[in-house]
Image (cartoon, rainbow, N blue to C red; front, side):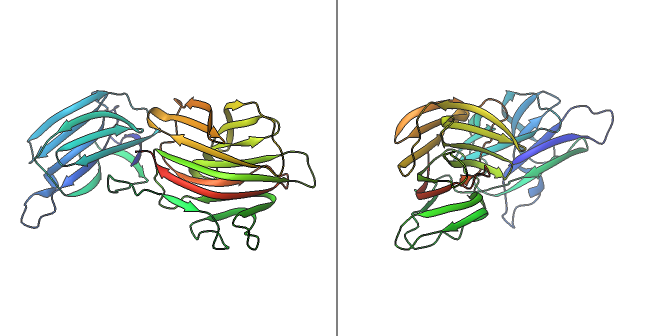
Amino acid sequence: MNTKLEKSTNPYIQYLKSYLYFRIPNDSDTMNTDTMYYRFGIKGDESRLVLYRRDGNYNWTRFGDYEFQAQENVWYNLGVKVQGNSIRCYLDGEQVIAVSDAKYQSGGIGIGTNEDYMTNYYDDIVVRPLVWPETLFADNFNTGQMDSLWNKLLGTWVVPQDSGFVRGSGSAHFATVVEDCDWTNYRYQVKTRIKGSEFVSALRSYLFFKVQDTLNFYRLGICNDSGFVLHKQVNGEWQLLANYPLEIKKNLWYNLKVEMGVNNQIKCYLNDTLRITYTDNVNPFVNGGIGIGVLEQEAIVVDYDDVLVKPLQ
């Protein structure tokens, strides 16, 4: 889940707290399930992330902690992976605590704080099996249309007859797959061919990843003024992260691929050759969906094919 911590309504409390709860017993024969669970989260009065198990009103077992000072009004991603007796806790995609405990083997989830009058915000709460499907998303457009999961936000999108690819056009064109896409570490690739523009000499084509919304995402692609280039957009503001000089040609198919692994590392491949490795240590996007398109209003026509998203195990 994502959480943003505001402050306590008690003016004498200056620290921040926010937690997620898991394996809350849901057996109807179990009493006091509101005081039986595991709890992981931000414990600002100690400047730490802490994992507890609660076995009643006053019976708390502390399993682990990690030094961390939360900031007010900053979004953080908290996560846990539980399998059998194994419990692994994560902050912004990085493992911070790992323990083993057999007390509670199943149960529900929760969010919140049960002390100190905290005001917090919560978003993107997801529960899923530990094992990803082999393929998260794929579309080769061989059906003659785009998959129904695509959200065509800008431009005109058509699959030319008997082509097996999709063509984006218009002043700008942009399509995304983001609904229920909490994907974290994944490999995303697409083939692309730039047909060009009648109005400008620019050549561009991009894939988008870890898409939060239309103003927040990473973008990787090719353009004739920067070559093979990686950008990040935060609240509509562009940041150039890295580029690899390259001459771009029209009517030539290119294979773009990106891998998002642990520790916020991004590996970018052009035609299956690694060209860019970048680690984002400044408020990285932890998860999100994908996209294809050109946002610059240059009326560039681009073809896309063989969109494929797979988990990095």
